[in-house]
Amino acid sequence: MTEKKPGIIRRTFSFLGRLITGLRLVIVNGVFLLMLLFVISLFANKKMPTIPEQGALILEPKGTVVEQLSYIDPLVDFMGDNNPREQETLLADMIDAILLAKDDARINSLVIKTDYLMRGGLSKLQEVAVALAEFRHSGKKIIAIGDYYSQDQYLLAAQADEIYMHPMGAVAIQGYGVYRSYYREALDKLSIDFHVFRVGEFKSALEPFIRNSMSEPAKEANLTWLNQLWRQYGATIAQRRELDVEDVNTYVNDIDKLLARHNGDSAKAAVAAGLVDGLKHRDEINQYLIEVAGADDDDDGNFQGIAFERYVWLKKHELKKQQSKNVVGVIVAAGTITGGKQPPGSIGSDTLSELIMQARKDDAVKAVVLRVDSGGGSAFASELIRRELELLKDSGKPLVVSMGSMAASGGYWISALADFIWATPTTLTGSIGIFGAFPTIDKSLNRLGIHNDGVGTTTVADAFRVDRPMNPVAARAIQKNIEHGYQQFLSIVAQGRDMSEEQVADIAEGRVWSGQDAERLGLVDGLGGLKQAIDSAAKLASLANYRDQIIELPLSPKEQILRQLGRVFVPPMQGVFGSPLPSQLQQLLAPFKEASQFLQSMNDPAGLYAHCSECVAP
Image 1 (cartoon, rainbow, N blue to C red):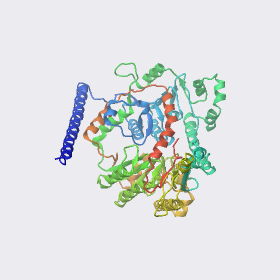
Image 2: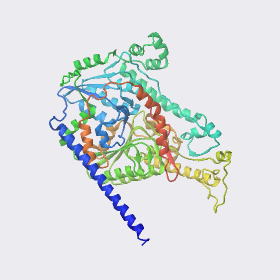
Image 3: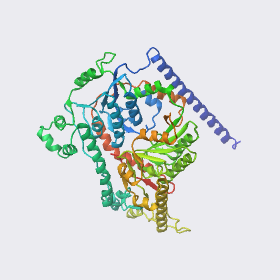
Image 4: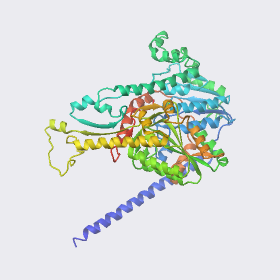
């Protein structure tokens, strides 16, 4: 009898578990259906949102401009619980909206609103600038408004015909730099040994653990691409504002003298420097925009306009019936490369491989553009992705890579075999190198009176124990493995770029290159953005009529409904003005977020990493 009781108990708890799970599913689905009915009833007597007969396109990016939106539960997204400053803005939506609006007779102007933009990135904003130039050629006016302009905000605003700012605002431009914290002395004080294995003179990802300062090779390499990016920034501002590049440099380097001449008034200083056309209070800006774009039909005192997110969705819905059946598939690879399945905003080897396989097996997809925005990560995960791309090419479908802000280390590993590689002049790429690391804390423990001893059957039985000294046999083996990984990297690049391994080695060593230099060195084929990449992929596939389509994993019916409702009913004037302080605080926290992402990527089964920690695109 006593032997049967555990079985009865197990079955009882198993039944209760299934019952609770079933009830939970019923409740969750019931709540979802009730919410859906509520939404339908809420909008049943209202007209669906439409594009106004006459009005401005409102380009108001929020948070960080990204290649791929991070995963957010569709219900949370629909309910709008996210603070605008913590949001992300999809680069493709910005560009698509601008290009669609330039030929739309209903759009009479474009208003750039930058107050909620936290981080755009030079490379991404250059692509937006190209689209805005096309819009400007249509003869429609572009006006930028803001309380205050940070460096990225001003780069976007500078694409406008007119720039206005609040009388208490400022244009805060500070240039580009790479500054890191170094921990060697702290590790010595803690008696922690950080064993670093690497190949490449310029592969400085782990320098903070073995040095107290940046090495001279790292300074040389970093300053090269930083200067190139700064020249691009200054030239862009100077060209748009009809200034000399030296005027921009003087404004930044001698801002203290300029403010002294204007009694500390940063707004007047920006006007005097030619960076801003005028100073207006919010009501004055709104009144001016009413004169340009027209008054809101609801007679609420605002100018007439439509948010670019809503506009691009509605416009694409209008054009849906005219779309070609031939597809150029766009696969986004954004984030740190890790193994397994990862949500959007990160690159999981299994997830991305599944998308590539999906594109390979879809007969409608005639060519593929891989949009890369990654500083790398796991070498093993990178190789799994590269192999799937190789199979895509073997199927006869052209593969074109479009590099975003960065495509370095593992990001270049997965790009090298493409038929054609596009980058912007300020893309950070290359960083062809491999490293590994292993910390030991035996000395720290010894200082505390904790000692480790024992026996083993082999020379490496105690390898990879953090409480023992680094095993010399294991250390030599790791270094050899790192060197092999580096040679494999060189071989992959040489085959993909039709170069010898010696030629690749001359420009490798972990060195980071700008897109401008990468084209000169043969690491990329042309300078351009995603649009150029899509057009070239279609040309390689001999397509006269085609459409581009993002390749994504399918959503559940519930997720699809909530996502579409969220896109249609997004408030058009959400977050019109705001203080820049929270965005500045988030910029200060950005390095900690990036460091956390880097540590999370340390899951390579072979302990080999193709990661570029310098490639934090300005």
